[in-house]
Length: 309
Ligand code: PSU
Ligand code: MN
Image (cartoon, rainbow, N blue to C red; front, top):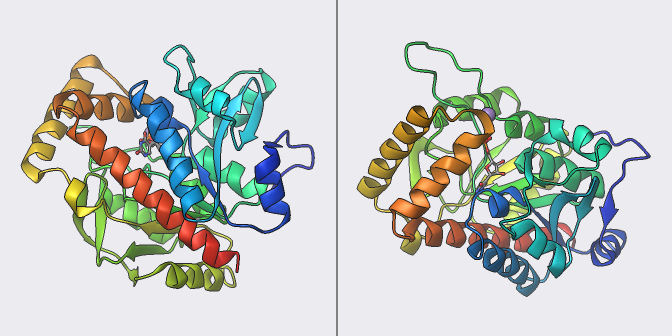
């Protein structure tokens, strides 16, 4: 991303110091906390994510926009604020950053906006849960215009995104095609199957596989000689937390029906579906979601450490 010199970006002292000394840093997003997890649990996960990154020897940089200022690295009080049910945060994609800053508003950042802000701050590694992608066509048509800005941003932003694939509500085959069109390398971490968030396999192969953090870091370094795009590393959910496929398929069908009935569209679809999973699975999908983001944060920290060598 090309950054204007006057970009009002505020780095916490710890993150600014880590950037200046080329220490390993992992960017973390806030939408998965504010819009993807229930209040209470989200704060626990926010703190655990930062803890996992620290234990692996890197500095965590959770990102959000607060009162018109994009913040990279939050205090514990700011984490509490973004996780509070009264926060009333918007879900901010990259296109929302300008209006949010100009109007002095607050919001949580998605993969697209977090990746752009991380890159602007000089942080090359970012961990999340699931990437946005191409939605299935509206019934009765064969086209969709609902293609997540996460994809276009990854195409233009030099950042490694560690995630557990795309949510299974998406057209994963189409999403992989768009990533190919944009020349974004897609890597599987210790797998030959592209994962699907709650499930370890989407049924689609990955073009390339890496088996340790050093290999992942080497791919990022080599890719930079040819392209300024990002790299996607897909790390499947830990096996003991994978959802049962039949339960998953039932909850997804119910969730999609709920979305259709309520007329939910656009950026509200993912939060409504996630909430349905969390309430209807008796908490199993919450444990799964937490386990996969923690695993991604740990892996991202190890790769950031390799890249900082
Ligand atoms: N990962 C999670 N939970 C989430 C997300 C990722 O475990 O809620 C968020 C990310 O912010 C991602 C967004 O950018 O879901 C995708 O939303 P959409 O499907 O509206 O593009
Ligand atoms: Mn969309």
